[in-house]
Image (cartoon, rainbow over all chains, first blue to last red):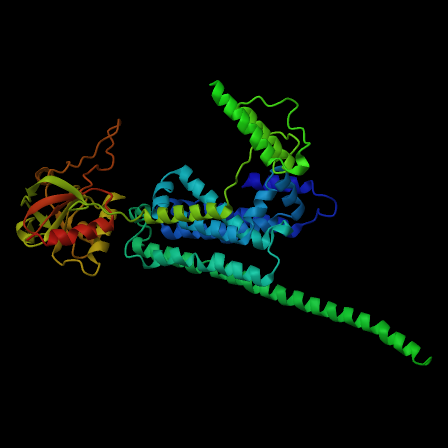
Length: 266
Length: 267
């Protein structure tokens, strides 16, 4: 975490002129790294890796709904362009940021990493656990790229499109595995079913809680963003209509002036 | 051989004159007169095609054409893999029981121990007509015992489970596990679970009768006793008094749910 923050700060020192004081970005980045730490380290990391399906789901939620968007918001555009250029990721990022590709890939990751087979095999060892966390983070970055990518041309332009994308990619599809978890008759994951109980929480109740976290946990983020986008849209439309009216007035005024000037001559 | 070459020679000449368009008649196909051979025929045809424009006239370096897979195909493959992984959780086997089946059914022993009320309790005679799930453990066990008992408690609480199932918890640590301690421990899972104790020798003998590994507290180099090591299996006996399956740690709830109704029906 320290490495991430220190490299960010060092990189920011090399900002081009006029981009030095991006305090807002810095704040977002540091919050995202801190959240990454919370999700990875003790106690949530340990509980999610070995004991509770609900903790596992909370980790997933933090990675994809908080760390990923804040990470994007924390990176200024010049930095993103420079990094994408140096790492030769620009084209790949552009392709992955296409809404259909991003939505489908994210939801494939979601379904694959929550399948009983994947959880029972990857969560039992440290490397598998790390891999799963990493894939979640990448999935989160992918799904948020069309909305908040620092590279402007990778973002979706239409407001209704962005809202529809958020609703479909982050609101609808995750409800399917969440439903499986909530309404399954038996614990789906052996690793959590056979772990010593934490605070007397039974395996089935824990799984139902995990389903609820998956289903409801993302709602404030998704709907909060949709509301913010809607507000932004109305503001932009209002500004556009004001500008259009002003332009119209500006165009019509000289004509009327001309008319008033010509009238006496007639 | 010579006849074949002559035939090809004629064919090449004919095909050239037929396929060469009027505008291309003066195109220098070859400085020499063709003298036959399949290779030459191909070469000539290629040149004509070049002249027509279907093949580039200038010789360009050979480029390897890499056909990139469509992103939609990749996505479709990913979806299929994801669904397959999700479906991996569900599998079916053609065994009678999901637990560890024994080669030969074994009759249940009938030792007499002390229950949590302080009364004599005959393990087989006092549980006639029920499925008996016998487990040897101790109340301060940190992992296996609570998990087994929690699993059984959850499974037995399920609707549709047969009522004639008795869980017999036999302590392997009689010094610590008094009847009261056992009762308090079992009540965390179910008030219906039966707790049993006895003397150390008696309990070791009962474990042998059930073919369980006798619990031991191995000491380290300094002579300090470590945690008790004990058999993690649940020994299942049907109402007919025969044991056909055993359930090691870990046993999943789906396994219990599949097997217990079958065992309960064996009267």
